[in-house]
Length: 143
View 1 (cartoon, one colour):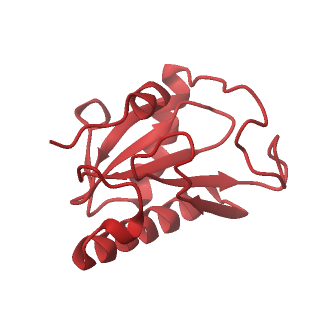
View 2 (tube, rainbow, N blue to C red):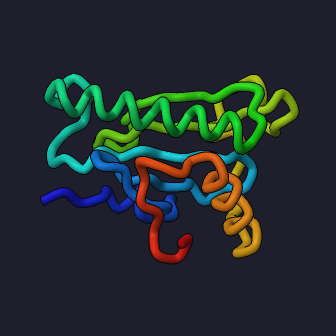
View 3 (spheres, one colour):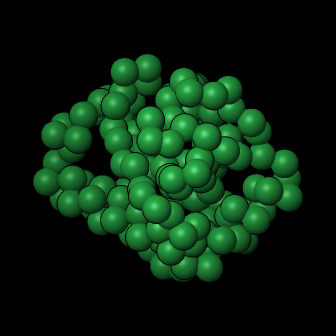
């Protein structure tokens, strides 16, 4: 049975679900940082997905990346599937700005996370919802 890795549960806020992947928001207000987690058991690498799931993951990643670029006026979208700390397959989508606190370096380990306030969280998700209107079912708290 598919289950989110405890570290993803700890670090992320459940935003909703695409047909293949759960969408999380990493609880760090310094960067709009979203993660797609395919709902498949025992998968740590993209090549372990079957062909249909690989294509669906790419579609979901592109839908999300385009929405993030539009919603947050990003200078760059960083997309990565590292898995060094959490082996469960997950794909990071991080909105980057030339003026963000880590630019141009990667965000990992650069600064301690700063949790969203409830107001900041609602604003972040509303910005995403304005442009990502199909192919996703938002979590009840964001409907």
